[in-house]
Image 1 (cartoon, rainbow, N blue to C red):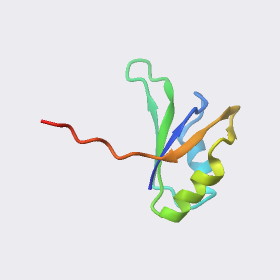
Image 2 (image 1 turned 60 degrees about the horizontal axis):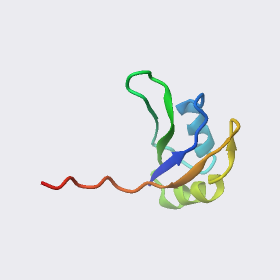
Image 3 (image 1 turned 135 degrees about the horizontal axis):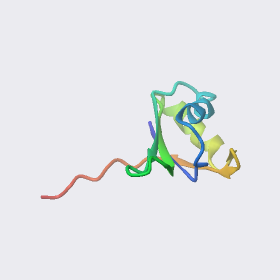
Image 4 (image 1 turned 90 degrees about the horizontal axis):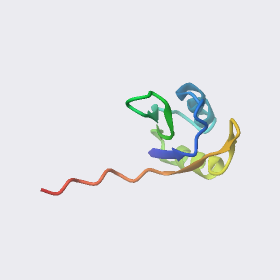
Length: 85
């Protein structure tokens, strides 16, 4: 399950975010999106969890919780839209 996470503290690392989600099960990958020019985190990212029920449990329990002083919002990520020709 691909999970969209927003309103992240700008100093939060990918390892720290992985630890938050690992409480609910296996985490395949974590990606915090950064500005390509400054390298500064943009405050959102994605977490990939292989087990659907563990991913849903993480969404249910973590949405709105405080992580490093900011209430993060967690939801299932929408698949990318196909480009039209």
